[in-house]
Length: 329
Image (cartoon, rainbow, N blue to C red; front, side, top):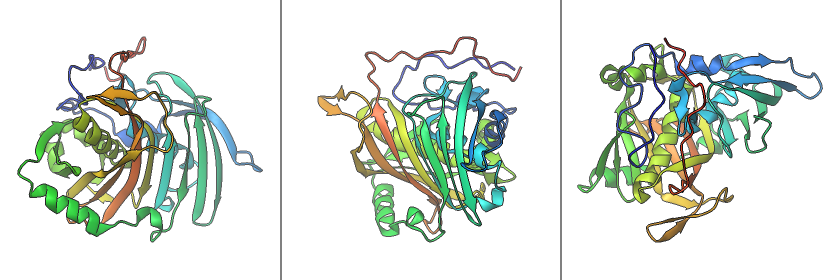
């Protein structure tokens, strides 16, 4: 089966339906990322340095404009690498922070460098992609009771209670999931197992009745970026993402909350591009807080932040990679 690259968007932000919503033969996103390393050297015993190449060869990994989706950077740029050194069950809880100062194209070989160190339950890996200091990042082990996963439950519960009782909350369907937005909160209350019955393409994020780590990163990115894009009616691009992952064992058949705190939106500490004039105001790089939790907020599965920059639609032109094609034929 052949899947054509997406056409130039005609609306603000991602479309209501996932490009792959009705396809049933999409490989697991986790499998695609795990198989992205095409070459990887043994680490230097003294420094932990390794080098190799990666290639992201499936359109289901796409983000605008036909590059690796922004949220997937938070998994793709460390998990396949550290999995060479540690068993999956020894990785969590952990955190990752990745700069996304430039895009990673699909269907092209990309150089990869990493520096790994580990002792006992503790580990850390630093990475650099595409020979670029704008694609650097790191991932590391954290304590289960550490600050990275510490959540002000009262704050989030207050935002949610107010939002779900607000009759003016704006509903959206974006990338096949339902969302709602108020002045203070943008959120989705969802059962992915049920959603995957209605939208077969979502099964790519479910592995053995568990939600993949790729799901966490992909949809936290979505809820964060779209929270701002729908406010200002302008597309935004991810420029930095940081996520603390409590576990990779998230049951798919339960109610979950994906939330972005609109009251937390603030100027980013690092401005990565020229400000853009939007509705009479100047907007630069901004940061927003986001979480993934159980429907009752009793369990926090992931917590983080995302920094984004507005697209200047007067100059932005999506690029379709020459020769790009889906391998599923």
